[in-house]
Image 1 (cartoon, rainbow, N blue to C red):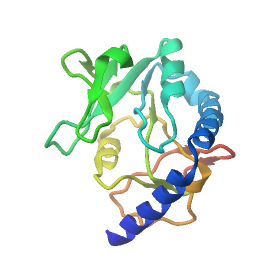
Image 2 (cartoon, helix red, strand yellow):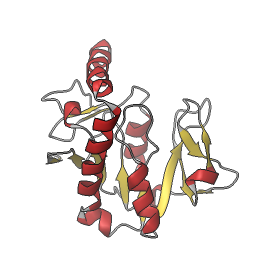
Image 3 (cartoon, rainbow, N blue to C red):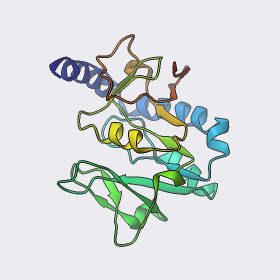
Length: 192
C-alpha cells in the first residue's frame, strides 16, 4: 500500500502544481471532449461528482447535463459507512451540503435515492490512470466497491489532466478499471 501512497503523492503534487487558470482552461477542453461522447449524448441518468481542490472541474459538465434534461446523480459517503450511496439531485445549489471530507454531497432529506441499474453513464474521479483504463483512487476504495456492485455496468469515464496519466500503476484485482480516460489531448480506451 505504501507504493500506492507514493504514486498518489507524486501525481497529486503534479496536479496541484497546475495553476488555477491552467486547470480551468484544461477542464474546459476536457469537458468539451466528454460532452462529445456518443455514450454521454444517449445517457438519460448520469452519475457525476462535485470536484474539489485541484481536480478536473466538474461544474460545466454538471451544468450541461442539467441543461440537457438528464438526471444528475451524485454520490454520498455516509459517516462511518464504507459504501457510497447515490442520489438524484435537482438543484446542486440547494440540494447539497458538505460531506465527511468537505465534498459537496446530496442531502438525503431532499434527494431521491437512485439504484445502480438506473445509471446510463458515470463520470468517475481518481488520482492517476493508465492508458489501459487502470485507476488509482484516493485510497478509500469507495469507487472500486461501487463499480463492482453494478450488475449492468454503464460506460465509466474518467476526466483527467495529462499529468495524471502514467505508464504503470500498482493495481490489484480489487482495483476497478474505467472504460475511457479523457484528457485535454487524448481519449484512452480500456484494454479488456
